[in-house]
Image (cartoon, rainbow, N blue to C red; front, side, top):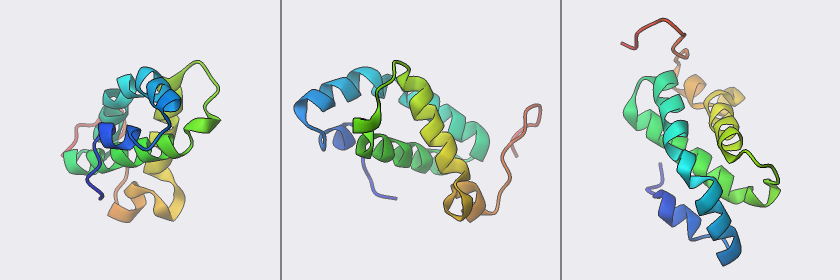
Amino acid sequence: MRPHSPEQIVRELSLEDRERFEQFVLPHVDAAFNLARWRLRERSDAEDVTQDALLRANRFFWSFHGSDARAWLMKIARNRLAAGNNGILRRLGRRPCRPGTAPH
């Protein structure tokens, strides 16, 4: 996947949106990564999903009007995990890790 850090992704926004994105969204990057890591079991795959979720959050940040950026980012990450044939779980031919099961 494209090697974008959260900081590089944020640079693509206007100054006002950049400050809002940094304030509201970036503090929740670890939560999105942890969700992806738990579901995918592989660190590199989880990093790809997190990066993709951040890119989408950046692209559609204009549509964020809520007060819970964590829930918004987590929803984007969950959608990237399971987005039909484009979802990473389907591309990798994997099932998500279910609660109570240990990753292999």
